[in-house]
Image (cartoon, rainbow, N blue to C red; front, side, top):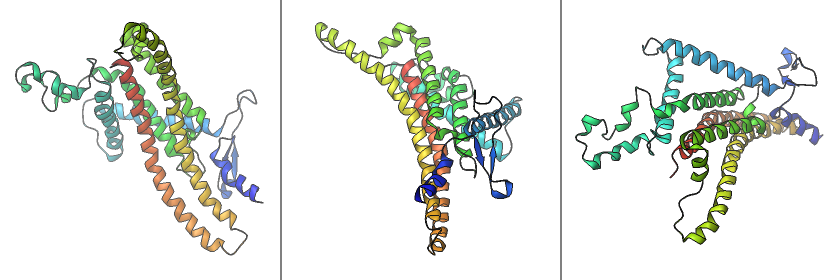
Length: 311
């Protein structure tokens, strides 16, 4: 009996070919398998398509609204625009930098010490990064990837907050593909900026050692750094998967208390407490949905910046 309850509680956090629905809607909906066993269509696949389409509709419409240069009106559209501008101005541009080996905030110091006249003449005051705030910035070429990844992850996370849905980012294969995407962008950015040889050489930090010792150390450090490059992107996938999966598992456990007590009078005390606990964890999950999307793209931006501007 306990194992049956456990199965009832936990199977919905995994991917499947069935959507669970309220009983008045039929109890469940089996996803049509258009390609048979050759290419099974699962719940998470459907939700990923839904998240992608929602992202496309929102930001295509938003782009059309701002195409004429007028400010966006309406709380809904301002909400999405504010997030996009925050990622651009506070994450991507300062972290990746302007192509001269430092971020935008580096302009606060980069020229003032060399006597280049007034800050007003050159735009390098305490807010020197504002020189790019309304125009194009070299780091903006990475914005399409960062924006697309953030909003796709966010919407995948938020879909899990809807009853009878699920979070595709709670599956390691989904987060693994996202991490592979970041890895590809990082490598292409590093090679594009430094060349293949320069990018590989940048993996080894400067070593202040005698020639023979340096000759021995460099291959070992290069190997460790190369392995570390793969590991940190793997951790990127595991971190997102673990946080989203853990949240849904906690909710399942809390609601599972109701099933465990369903055969006794304790259910009348356990049920209200479990529901309240689920509501509290659910609200926390909304925060985690935004936080984990931000953490993923922030670390992706850090990796891109490190690849294009090694120190």
